[in-house]
Amino acid sequence: MNVKNLNLSVEELKILAENGQRDFIYGVGYYYENGIRTSVDLAQAAVWYEKAAKKGQAEAAMHLALMYYQGKGVEKDERKGLRYMEQAAKDGNVNAQFNMGRCYEEGLGTKPDPSKAFDWYKKAGAQGDFRAMCCMGVSYLSGQPVPYDPVKAFQLFEKAANANIPAAQYNLSVLYRYGEGVEKDEEKSDFWRMKAAQNGFKLAIKELENPDKDPEELA
Image (cartoon, rainbow, N blue to C red; front, side):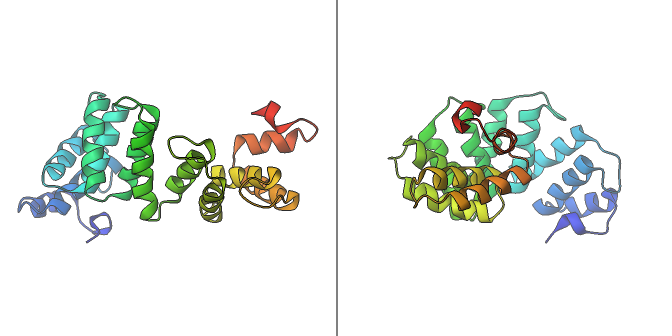
């Protein structure tokens, strides 16, 4: 059931939520957050998301986590954000799994932990999240926290690049440029760098704007 597409007022949705159905409860929060058939009210959105999250609604838990991270509708609290994000991730929400990877990679609400970050990216990648595949590729290329494996990095970057992930497109161009994990191919390197630039990847744009400079000088 997709409550986002229901042709109901927020008051009608609240009546349906009274029976405790967690998707309807989540829907009320979503309506308030996005101003669907009502005015935007982030505080009310947080209240309803919390009700749904307590009933195990993963999407609500993820939305609430983001609100705590950003301090929208609630007082900013990255630890609470992490707790709700983890709840959603453990319930199988792929976006939450990717976000957990970011949290552990960047130390958001917790200490940085590259191994845990990679584990969450792997879970998200297994569900087809191409952003997570790109992050895994970076880990294999850097040799942290997994062993250096440019072939695996290439395979992951290629999948994500074909799914139009700009960072993966740029990284793929680098592997082709230096023949790392794949046979060197300047033409393919240029192709993927152009793709990354067209998608707004800043380093690719810099390289195209400064063709006479060593790419390493622009990083």
